[in-house]
Image 1 (tube, rainbow, N blue to C red):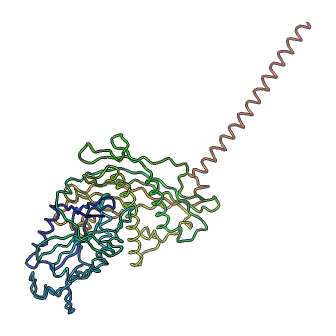
Image 2 (cartoon, one colour; image 1 turned 90 degrees about the vertical axis):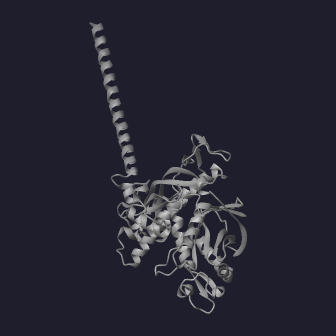
Length: 480
């Protein structure tokens, strides 16, 4: 249970100043995401940044004020943008919950290990905040929690930070989104971001996924097959150990270096690499799911190195799932636009058992983008995208204002290895099939053994005949 929240002083002061200095007509209300870290095993939460939710596709704000008399969501703007309108006490906060949840889903894909969307913040007067039902805030927080779930945890607590401009003060509450309850907690300011330690590792994987002939089309869909492979990787990572500077990471291992720390994951030995057994008669094809993930995670000063290992594992799985989601989202958008079903953008509609030749699918590649105070966020580029697309997404989703230099973007995965689909007959009897090569080698070996035996037999007969001839000659000479 979280009792105290420590927020980064620099980040919170920066967004507070930007809200109060937002022009001649200050915003009447605003909603955004709280970025930080909460844990069920600690009573101390951390807040690293606040990110405002952008306007909707129609240009409407995600948060506004509404009078009880139904005057709409922008009464203050009609009255000249005064900071204290006369009917403020009758106004309540209105939030587009679906849009905020979608913003949380997009932002969570860009965060690295150890950093999550941990709640929402509300910029509104004290009167407007109190005039709003707590059920509204609980509903928004529930949508955010479900749209941006944390890896391998069922922790139900999220943060609700209220920034009041009349009077000017901060307040923090803990919301249990499962029950809808709210309770106050202490909010302290400190230099949190500067104390974070970065951890990195490179994870290489290769999973072979058999495609069944008798399975339903939904079971053999692109989404289900790749999800099966990701779940298999997640299961393997649960028992993986880590090495740091040649030492096995234990619970009490302390840090002795500054700057990024490189870890190496040690995976358990597996006799059978397939995630599920399949008989030869039932196999229609094979999906080779392989590639590399450059994972990163951030660790707080009071956390153990083993927590960094757990966060790195979570970053690997979250990265793979995010890439799959991006491909499915793009395919769905192309489908609604009437795209070609046979194009690479509609790979989710492929029926794997019907493929008669190799089919390769490239996943989006990961790039690192400098964010704030030495921290990085990530983005995923499709084969046709450039750093300019990353720049646009960072400005929209992460509110990274100002001039963003694309040369500072780090491309850690130059080219993602494609997922390869092979038909059953190509695997068994194709020219480059490993099974056929094995059979050829076995046949060649057998023929060599037979020829060798024939040659050995001929040599023995020749030697025997030679000795018989010599003996006969010697006996004949003795008679004479």
